[in-house]
Image 1 (tube, one colour):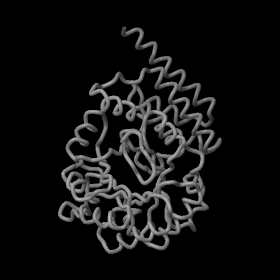
Image 2: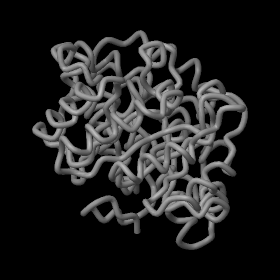
Image 3: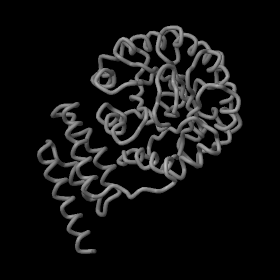
Length: 329
């Protein structure tokens, strides 16, 4: 069990915050399929920008199960503190601070993983946010700025001293972006140097890898990001492996179909008739990627403009897959 402030996280699997991915429908789905905690999409700390349609969708906190976690990003302590307090007013129960995003548009504003270059500023931001809210504050970082500037241990100590309640470490530097393989030596060292919960992140795609990372680092949990795209069952599968040591059967075609259709309906309900069909395209594309002729099917799906035609096409495509499976048997 993972403890973050007053919150008992029943299993140690956390859905990573991913901009444009971990919206409310996806968070609810991953929680239903075994994620112990889900974290909402990154929200800018500049509340003057919250009137945009994108931000309004990201600021929906009260319509999901507890504990509700939201991530904020920025580089000005007072602004970050204000954003944290406003998100708590909107229903957030855990505030996560982003110091791990390697994206240029974030780092160019001296936010995300760029902050790891300035340890004094990190301390100021953490102190300001922790002091502004009465809910747990967590932090997500990378191993450092570059391979010769790995300061995750120093940042972790600052975090613990500032009152941060849990720390996620992605096993790459900022300059690595998502290239190469994540390394977990640094994560293990961080775990040895602090007493707060440490969560390992990076390239955790299945049960055996999760078990390996937990055993190697001593981490209190793992965070899963890209591996959940089009595969929300990854949480159920990892849970099963951690509990039994066995790799479970993958979801059946019928379960994939039903889950995808449910997800599709939830996206349309959340985003409406105009954005619903468009935002659903990337999610459906990830689901279809693993299926025979999935790329072709995704191209056809992307031409469709309403829920009924999207549902009809997916039902048709999965009927073809079932028929092909029966013939092969």
